[in-house]
Length: 502
Image (tube, rainbow, N blue to C red):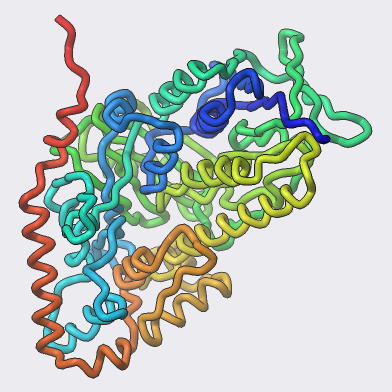
């Protein structure tokens, strides 16, 4: 009988390392499996403030985390979606919300009715029919109503939080459950000569740490999977040309907004992520089209509050390792790949990597079929997220800079070409292979960036236009009324803030 895995080593901390440690320790007791995490305080983490998507709630639920404690300890705020400014054309703005648009009727997608209502004079954008988008613009939030008949049941949300505080919070969680943390830098990675598996790592102080399974959470260095096992990197920069970021925190300049903002710039875009203590800002850009100095100037000029530090430069290449699990090593986070933070998918891909490993949890023989399934799944996840992010760049009409001319005219993957063609012809959008982004997300970006179908569904088109218009307008008003009756975002957060001790 093949024995179970008894020793797991995680190389690297940060969000990836501590998410892995927390998830594994929540499922297995120390007597069943030892978990050791190696990190060095001398090696900084990339995290500059995280924006997430609703799947983070599932991860917290897996860990049994209390939401109030989580909000308080990570300086979290609520996120209802992302506002995009100047992406389709300069002057455009739309929200990609977490909730659906309206309510599907008689088996037909709501956006088909919205398309038909335009013929009767409807000029309201599609996000006016999303409760999350309307609440975001009003600065409101309330938790979803469990009653499916309530309009508030349509609310879906995620968080913004401080990445360093998040890692610290998960570290405390994991250590409480028996995870052993070792402070130190790795000097050498030792492989078993007969199999090539990683057998141990040696630290600068001479200590060695043995393991049966190693998680590479070493960031862009990819110390184990990339440098030791020599797994090549699949470069997607021809589709995602941004390769640098500069990040800086700033002071608040107004109320806490319950959404992320992504503003297109001349050679990239700028993010705005509000946490309770400060605002995280960053400028993603391509060095082929803009210098670092110019990028820093653009970033600082776009701040709404006073900068609290100097901009920090981050280099990257969009893409992923050709395999994610090789021999006894699984790469999680930046060591596995990076697709830039435009749709806040970085933590999701970490979470998915951990969850898929747990779903396949092997015994000590590490069956090849498990590795193959893991690699197939993770490659599909990366490719599907890749296509959604490329859409934002390729679906632009901007021709005011060389960068946007490149994005507008570049060849795109056939998988994305197919999705665009389906929608352009008749508003068809389908969720393939249980992909992360569902139909409402694709519809939000298609319509937000001016990809409007040539016609709506023929069955819907046969309905009286004025009746459809009245029905759609009634739904829009219901969204406004529901948002108006919600507490403000800040009122919701106030119940979780730390109280001062006299």
